[in-house]
Image 1 (cartoon, rainbow, N blue to C red):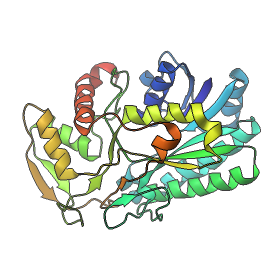
Image 2: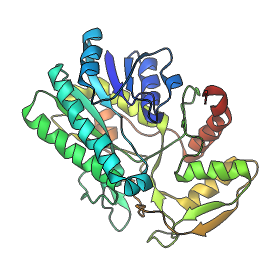
Image 3: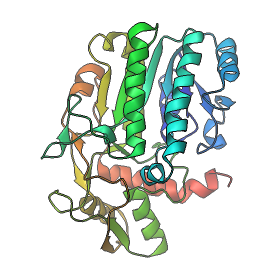
Image 4: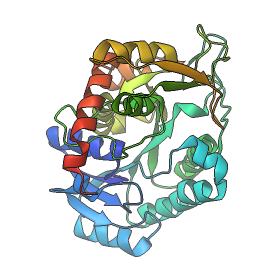
Length: 328
């Protein structure tokens, strides 16, 4: 099987590509390199360009006529940035995804897996959600995912393409073989900030401490990126049997971890514990949620295998290697 991965030189997309290769699936990478890294596409069929470039999409399908499915990972994803510049986010995530869908239809693509987000949910009082939970996105980034899901559903209802949305919770870790990891030296999420604090010998700031959680800090479902990648392989292999049953699957561990608990786990992994201080919430941040659904296990035969501590360990290992693997 040959699969086109948009955003395939990014953190998640490149890890999915590695998992595909390991499973005997050939990835074809499309990435504009706005946030992706050329190094993550080395040794793989790679096209540099934009998902909205119809001529490039036509070329990809002409040169790879046996592409059986598309994994659409290309997106901007930083919540505070989306608050500061919503026009950029709607243009990149929604307008270009619509153009991309048109190009796929023109080239006879019949299957798409869409990288969606659990940030679209309104969590219950216990902070859990399933695929039927109400949607209540709290940032422009999250709203772009809701718009795209609805847009793709409308297209799939009348056009010859099926779309499966995989709603990710909070990815951590790196490819256990260290082929790829977070390309950013200073990522904005909690674990990235902990690693930064650890490397610089400064306190880690908990952003927001009055959420209605068990310790006041935000709660997330931290899922290892390699587990996410394995779920995509399972979805590709079972795609045609899934859509009659569902078009949406949550990908999470089923366990919630607060930011304070993540810091405690981090300090159990490292040799020199970090100090923790409290500060205000960032724009667009929410209390958070974790999945209570077993749909992924039932339909994909998938469940998360890696622990939070293992995800932290792999993130730290990648952070030590990052500058030697990436050229700038």
